[in-house]
Length: 591
Image (cartoon, rainbow, N blue to C red; front, side, top):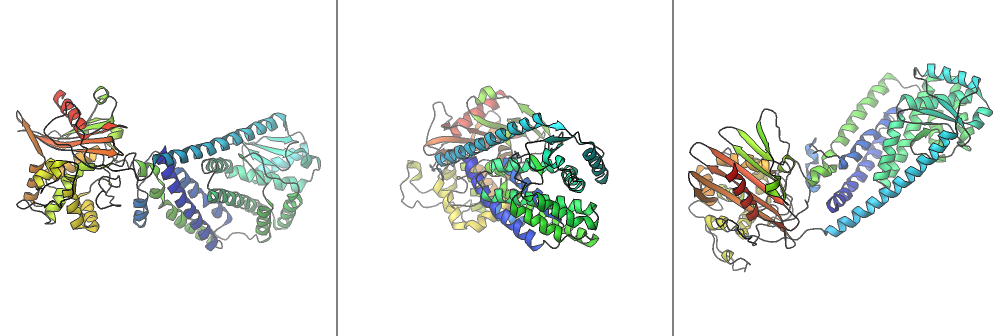
């Protein structure tokens, strides 16, 4: 909840900017855009407003937005450091599970408070909507089918003019001052009794054509979406202003559609009808209804549009369509920025078609832990997966990344297989084994974080980014502190991607020096058992003293098979790399 609120707040900053850009684009291209296209330009915005709530991973459509996508990248529920010093009873003794602690960058309490405030506002808006729905239901109950035969005859003529074959019911009511169209699936037109009583054929024709134009262009659907946007974004004045502008553009587009049908002599009279009704028209108190109502400022813009009306030429329609496509494509480029799901979970797209996959049920083994187990048999090209959702969700790699940090140090010449010694700087660490000079072998064995941080500092961020992009590691996002990008949730990788990365490493698909690959393999060798040699690396995420994330990844060499495995576990307080290793050992033994 807290992370959602913080990410949603960030999304609203971008949404406000997007609305400003859209308003500017509409203003600059107003002479090129038809009234209908000006209204339709709001549709992509409504789509963008839905993106933060969609459970799909967004795709980066435009490279120029990659910097924004990086800024919107997630802080997952944990902000872990390296491995933990905690040893659980019964843990395997072939790998030291040491590490550092990191504090959360943002207090989770702030996020929870923001979520509660947002949810309370949404609840308040829902209550107001329900009240409006109740009032509208009372209006429907008290309404009567249109009885006036003369008005009914005018209505039938309007249906023919609009080429509408469906007969939309018309009702009369004493509780409205202006006509409205309501109902998305069963639309009905509600006419004020006083307009029918004061019968004026031309005025009634204009009003009925206006409401039927709303029906023909499915404005009720967009009206519902606008109201939902107002509910979800109740706190954002930019969204409210955008919806207000959208309603005005909708009415202008509707007026223009009516003017296209009317003869030139009727245009002025149509405008006068709007002016005559201006004092009687009040804003509809029913959010899901469309009609001729609106504020005086909106009425003024509509009357100006009527006064300046000209038949749209073919050239303007083509130019308008092309302008619309360009602006809509530009807006679509912001999808990666607004995708909270991509920001919060960054799900990896794993294509199952054509793969030999067996899904496992390991609920009893994992127990209280949320997580995943993935095993890949290279010789048989087969997968065994427990919990596909977690297996495709990117989380911080913590100390499992040290495999590739070591390889990076070797490839850049910062260390070498023959000379990997780094001098201890004298800074005291809580783990005694860290307080000495280190080689690659000892640093990997004891997960000495300062050793790998030293490699990164000597290389620099630009080289690290190029390297991670070259090897295709996880979400390829490197930002923040150079000492903790692999531990503070900016860099993320899923268990399935861990397997794929291990294959690239094992078979040296990177095209790196074979000696460097061999040196890293030797550093992660754990033990031998019967005819198997086991290689691997643990990782533990610790947040404010609580162990929240555990990793164990690696591979098993046998005479005729090579197996790659990755296990991730998460828990509010007790999830470590050692426990992930125990679970892995238990699962592999059973398999």
